[in-house]
Amino acid sequence: QVQLVESGGGLVQDGDSLTLSCAYSGVAFGLAVVGWFRQAPGKEREFVAAIGRAGGSTDYLDSMKGRFTITRDNAKKTVYLRMNNLKPEDTAVYYCAAGYSDRISRASAYYKQWGQGTQVTVSS
Image 1 (cartoon, one colour):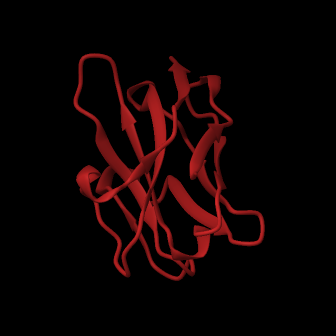
Image 2 (cartoon, one colour):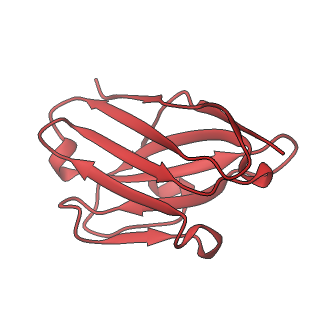
Image 3 (cartoon, helix red, strand yellow):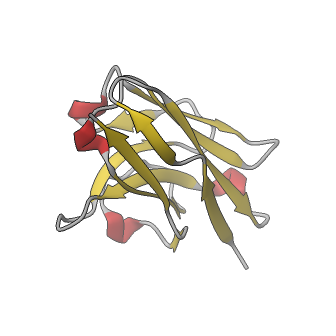
């Protein structure tokens, strides 16, 4: 059974950095496209970034480009989201999710397994 476990969230100051990790348990990590999403209180869940199976292709929401970087370590079955210059509006619960196709998608319906989320709070 596939499980995704996020870690690395916390309380930081405006302008700080954090790296989130998404640990995947299961044998199909090499076939998984992994995405990060976030949901702020009272808002819809939104796409943040995604990475293809081999890590060569990535996609970011425009507002994250240049600040967030998604990478993966297939040997460790882990995907990372490095977040720089964090802003209060980045405050949300961050989720990772796995989908199984040869393409990256921004659609949450594409992803089959989801983690429980990790809270990121950015204070001003």
